[in-house]
Length: 231
Figure 1: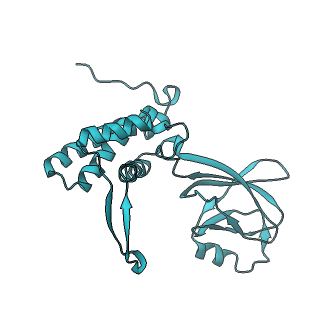
Figure 2: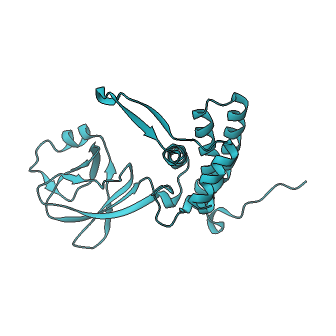
Figure 3: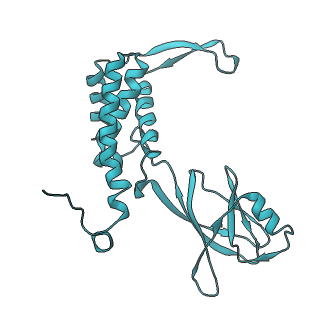
């Protein structure tokens, strides 16, 4: 499902074109007005649904790899701007070109284990220091290439140059029903209809989770083929 089809389908299901709405802009003490266009309103429903999905099922498509550099005598590593959570962090040992995976610890653990910044070597541990930075320990003894595997929000279909996304190509029903829940809640619609839309969303998510949290994490060689009991 592409963006135009999704947009029109939401309008059709909810029987609402969401005409432009103008209200008071009181943010930060403002005294002006704020106008929300039909596109802005429906885009909000869509992006809210997308983020709900991103945080409910872990598709490989929601993961990203990036390499960086730990510099000598600097125990901090800057994070990518779209970073949300870490899957793993590895240092590439320059003597072997092998991957050395760091263990996740608290900042306090690293500080207690390596109280002196001059204690250096190949880092063994990492911790999230703040939203932009990781702390590693011990302090890097040289410049090391690192590879970070992390969770991020993929580009929304509302801003996609192609008018579609992997999620809407494969599990469009999750985005559609998620957006309908958001839109009908915004309309202050009937509780039974909100319940119905949410039920359809949850049914769609069962299928999505079957792939993202199930089939993508197993294979027939090690786990065997999926079988149903037959009486």
